[in-house]
Length: 416
Image (cartoon, rainbow, N blue to C red):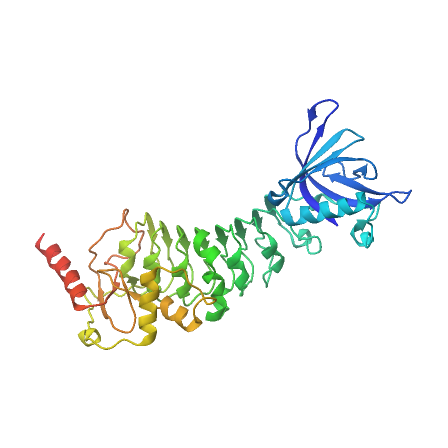
């Protein structure tokens, strides 16, 4: 096996510490049949061999769960201070223990040829990997397991590479300017993913059920930047409302005619770019958000000054369904949910909820809808817009009392 890692060498004789370098460690056999550790760097592609037999002074592995370990050698008097992926490092040290203990069964499958060399492209930065050409794509060797930033833009890829799912330290993923139409559910389980650029792909060709990656707990808690510009989207998935940590959302240059009501629940959202779509109105709930930048230019919003539809019959007191009672109870208890905990039909029911503009509570089967260009609340900055007339908003109300509260705001505004 080969271990992609950072290695810092400490020379105990000279009390000299060499700067940490991007390196590859592996096991090879020398002429006498003994196994040694072979150490390569970008500057030393021929590598350096360290004997193992009767030459390991001590192995410090107290912090191997953090991906840190030190191999102390007798000759030369070097300490190899290693930082790598915890799982890979543990496997590497287990093989070393077997060799030092003389237990060499099946060891051959972990040993590389003694004349093995590596190209410069193998020595990726452990934190940032940029692949600019198809010919540089690491199909066989994979990405360093400690990669934190991965840029795979403009490679004309049609499918998602599942080896990305092994990068448990990944914080930024750029898959822009490809032809990807499907993302696996497991993408949403990457524990540290914060920035995701999917612009200029074909996600609009993905069916609704293929957006389950948005529902996963890790992504909902950590993702703060999402760019899905230029994706042929005709509908924004309702699961977008589950990304409670989201601060920036770019969905411009698509074919959206409306936004899901759940977008108004993204309380941390600061930047919203919906320019150059086919939007007819905006969810009224976004007026509650503390947005600092909103771009709605290039849309064809409804132009009537007051196009109001209000159906009071939907607010009559009717016994709610068991599904609605379950949904209300779940929201009241503030339980984090997904399809692994509750039925998927209930998840969808919750995702598609409307939200009362007055009390901000979810409303399901019974609500009133109102279209108006009246803005009770103002954003912190002026919208970027190409329209000469006010934007139309879609408001929902869960009760007559909540509707009357909105009306009172309207009349108070007229009296000012």
